[in-house]
Length: 137
Ligand code: IDP
Ligand code: MG
Image (cartoon, rainbow, N blue to C red; front, side):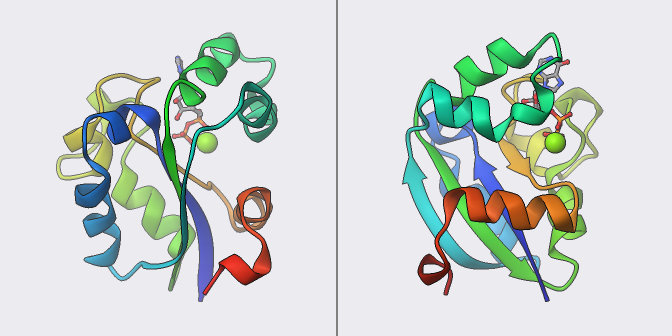
């Protein structure tokens, strides 16, 4: 069993896609072990995406991720990290496979509906960024 962090980003929350996106996880063997709705501060968004701080899109990404509420979730299941990445689709929704979350619910390479941890090690750090142990059930 693995755990991974998922974020439903501000674009998808604003468009009313929370339920439809959660259904993709629950219908594909990923259990919601923890969940909360948050409005990230600039500082939280900066810290969460610190790995990208030298990329040209960093400032815009931080602005976007703190522009409205998000839903953060701990997903649990077999191969949860990879399974979530497969369900999400490619970063650029125009390149995402048919039937993936980003192909179906995202607009642009920045406003791309969901975040998902990209390795087991990052998943552990990202889960700990948002959740205390007692919030994961
Ligand atoms: P990922 O979310 O598929 O793992 P990353 O490369 O880790 O993609 O990038 C993190 C986030 O930064 C993306 O989900 C997207 O919101 C944003 N981003 C990535 N590349 C670009 C870009 O070229 N322009 C604008 N935003 C980008
Ligand atoms: Mg990434």
